[in-house]
Length: 209
Ligand SMILES: Nc1ncnc2c1ncn2[C@@H]1O[C@H](COP(=O)(O)OP(=O)(O)OP(=O)(O)O)[C@@H](O)[C@H]1O
Ligand SMILES: O=C(O)c1ccc[n+]([C@@H]2O[C@H](COP(=O)([O-])O)[C@@H](O)[C@H]2O)c1
Image (cartoon, rainbow, N blue to C red; front, side, top):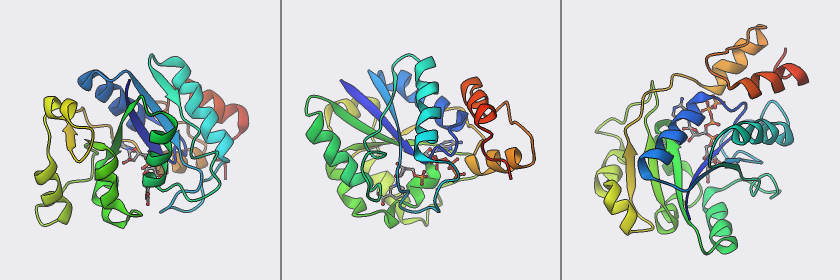
């Protein structure tokens, strides 16, 4: 199977995660998307709710979507969720699958700060999703990286690593930070959250001040 992995803190999961992943699955004809919450985010403060709660919200969303699965490999590893470590673990555990790693433009611009980031290109292909508010300047070192590794859908199907596919998707102007801010003010941003996520947040009283 060809599987797209979207890793994230998902604090909480929102349509800026879900819709790009759906588009990627459809445009690339992937068999599945795995949504993978991290345990210890390498570059962020500790999440606002527990890992189990973030995974539960992700799992509820996956249950409503065809071909979406939650992946708990990082949650079950009690060490920083470095993506290269995870990809090696996934490849060992599922040698029969091909994995592609999905990420938004903000993550891509920050890639040089990731643990052993160049090894990502030995392990996988990247699918780059645009994100409102994040533009790749031609002076950015990642601009040249993208141009050197830019792939078509056909090329992506012929090589398992080293390529970047920038996917054309409708922009999704959502972020977990803004959603947490709204929730702390007592507002439920219904346009940004799946019904199951809204229900979980309400039932567990999450993100209140
Ligand atoms: N609106 C969006 N459009 C495209 N990609 C997104 C969007 N929101 C998040 N992503 C991508 O999804 C992955 C996981 O994101 P994450 O869980 O950190 O959400 P976030 O909204 O950026 O969170 P926070 O606001 O807490 O930083 C990252 O690769 C990120 O770039
Ligand atoms: O490997 C790293 O050093 C690394 C640094 C920052 C982020 N990541 C991964 O990138 C994904 C998105 O991260 P975040 O912080 O935007 O939620 C998630 O799977 C993180 O574990 C990975």
